[in-house]
Amino acid sequence: MSYIGKQPTKAALTSSDIEDGIITAAKIEDGAVVAAEIASNAVTTAKINADAVTAAKIADDVINSEHIAADSIDAEHYAAGSVDTTALGADAVTGAKIADDAINSEHYTDGSIDTAHIAADQITNAKIADDQIDSEHYVDGSIDTAHIADVNVTQGKIADQAINEAKMQISNAPTNGYMLTAQSGNTGGLTWAAAGGGKILQVVTDTFSGAEYTTSSQTFNNTGLSLAITPSTSNSRIMLFANINGAYINESGNRLIVAFFRDSTNLGHSTYGNGCIGSHESDGRVIGHLGLSHLDSPSSTSEITYKVKGRLEDASGAGQISQNTAISSITAMEVGA
Image 1 (cartoon, rainbow, N blue to C red):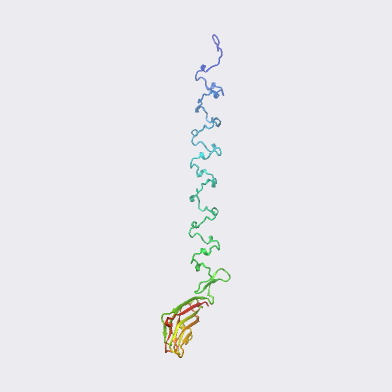
Image 2: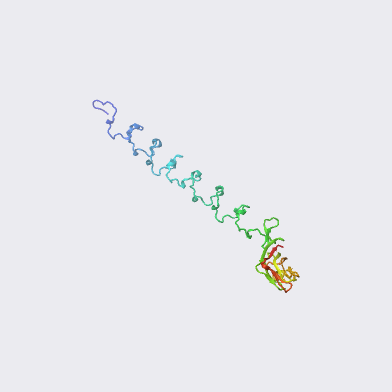
């Protein structure tokens, strides 16, 4: 460059020497613009390249929720253990968010588990505390033989009238008049067996009073003493007793003869029966007592009627029983053969 006249002296340029807008990016040396050269708030979004703002460029505590785009924070953005209870919204942790085997007993609130939370057949024996099962927990009819330990049904557990023949271990069918006895060999079972000899199986008695029996016949006829008995077994024996009070004869030398009858069969002597009472030859009157007994073998299990019948030895005169309403009786005892 040539100058006419005096050559200008070199001097530093000031901002006033530079027109606005004439310094382009090409005129600025790389690295020449430092923080002091940049005015406050001069760097706008448009001036910042994508991905240019790194973590180191961001001051602590300046990122708020409004700075974060929706759905932009993923799992990798969270540091391990950085999400605590305060960061979670109510009801935000659903079943899908909980890992398998992550819920332990300390996570349950007392009383929070009810029937709806327990799957069927999940309450095992190990889960039930001792002495927790009472009668109200059992369904009617749910306890059967397999649930009852041996030798644990005691007398106090058995209701009255609850044991019948079907409940007992009996080896044979019942027979009328037989008795239940223990089986031989100590098996614990029972068997029906004929009653042992000499055992009284039943007793039947009847009395006669309030009216006198009077006869003048030489043929046996009813005195009013009568009873019916049904033997338990066909080999039982029937022991008969008669207690005759107020026996009376009003004629000297005569006798009142009495006998046991099984139905129509005379069990005594055909003429003198089972006993008699006679009057003295001289005074012709006697009042006394007769005691009779007889052991009969009816060989029957049908009902049998036993009677005391009486007759006079001599047809003249009269004989009486229970004179003056004295009480007479007849008794039959079945005795095991």
